[in-house]
Amino acid sequence: MSATLDRPLPADAVVLTVDERPRRRRLGPGPRRRFAGLLGPLLLLAAWALGSWSGFLSPQTLSPPWTVVDTAQRLIEEGRLQTNLEMSAKRALLGLLLGVTVGVVLALLAGLSRFGEAVIDGPVQMKRAIPALAIIPLLILWLGIGEQMKVITIALGVFVPIYLQTHAGLRAIESKYVELAQTVDLSRWEFLRRVIVPGALPHFLLGLRFAVTAAWLALVVVEQVNATSGIGYMMELARQYGQTDVIIVGLVVYGLLGLISDAAVRLLQRKALAWQTTMAG
Amino acid sequence: MTGALGVTDRDQLEQGGHRPLVTVEHLIRGYGPKGVLNGVDLEIERGEFVALLGPSGCGKSTLLRALAGLDAAVSGSGRIRVPGNVSVVFQDSRLLPWADLLTNVTLGQRRSARARGSEALAEVGLGGREKDWPHQLSGGEQQRAALARSLVREPELLLADEPFGALDALTRLKMHGLLRKLLAVHRPAVLLVTHDVDEAITLADRVVVLSHGRIALERRVELAADRDPSSGEFGRLRRELLAALGVRRGMAALDLPDARDPRGKASA
Image 1: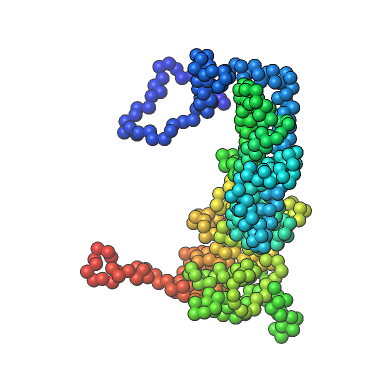
Image 2: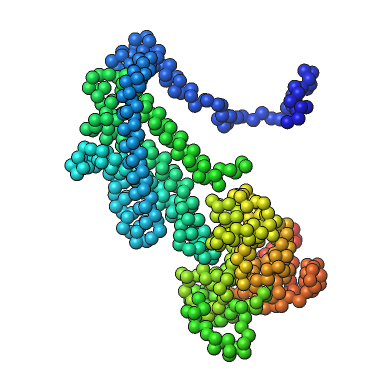
């Protein structure tokens, strides 16, 4: 920047546009403001604090915010929050990994061969109509109440959105690119690497966002059924002792985990799909 | 492809040793009263530039796709012989939007071809843009990249299906110049499908008019090297080709009812 541009205009400079245009009604929502997204959560927090302080909310119904902060601090000092969080994260991650792998493999089989589609697509659509959580009783009978059951329940919730989106992505790859691949004599492997995988990636990543949400959702449920560790177990225990403050700490942790993991997937989207987003240079 | 059609050395001997690069014999595509190609015979010599002219729906793309081997699902008969190394340029650039330019240009080539890919990009005036995404290029630049992708393979036959059809008139003229320059260096045989008569005359050694699935007219272009569109010879050839395409000059060609209506003075 040159110095002349940084120098403020002289006080007597005429900077007004002489506006003789007809006035236009502004119909759009107007420009974005930074941090505007925090307004809603802050108002909610203020209402909660006000309700607790005025006695409108009894501590048995909803612990005041300051008690929740104290409780969180205590739980961290005792190490309970970390160990339970670690357990929960491990389960969610394992289930996510397993579910994503299964979902991608099935989608590739169904998307790249007519036979695979005929065999796989129907059963997956049927599975889709049954909530993952409705299968828990059966899984408990088969696998007991150990880690295996929990990870598989999560994976069952995860693989469906991964499969659906990736399969849709494979189908959406335009036939003109397949034709191009034929004219430049791509091998099957190169076709997969250069056309199929990158072409389906945007859909896969969208599926991953749904899958991450599904993983946390399934986690909450399996941890409140016969668990002996994890955030859900900690909350279930707190329910038995009537500790609303601990329950709220659990809820906040779940919320934060959801937000953070979604932000991580979105970052991944931005990095992996640079070819879509560098439009502005 | 040649093997399946039973082409042997015997054929070559029968033709007295001379064998054109491309041979199409009595090609039929799509049966029935509305067949797309109704018996097309065409030969293209090594290094020859043939322009295939015709109105929309006359079957010119079908012929090109047959030569490109992209008509697996089309019924038909006949005999086609093409060389092993064929490149295709489509009307859209068909650059993979998720691959950078160099990857696009060297698609299907060995890794060692990347240096050649850079050279080809430089040849079409896109040197130094190896890492750009296709959407960062203008329409003309994308089509130039598609040309580079075709040339990096050093094809014996270049098939181009209205490659400049989607470009504006000025860009198209520049592309004609570029193509002529590139062909002077690489010298593949070319089959250019177009509906632009001037483009055909400017670029080709021979113009073939396809009409109702048959070859209706064939003309060798024997003009001065600059192919000045304002020259009389150019104009005569243009008129002849347009007539073969069923286009007459002037208002009469529009065949509007008003044009012949004696009372419709205002519309004249």
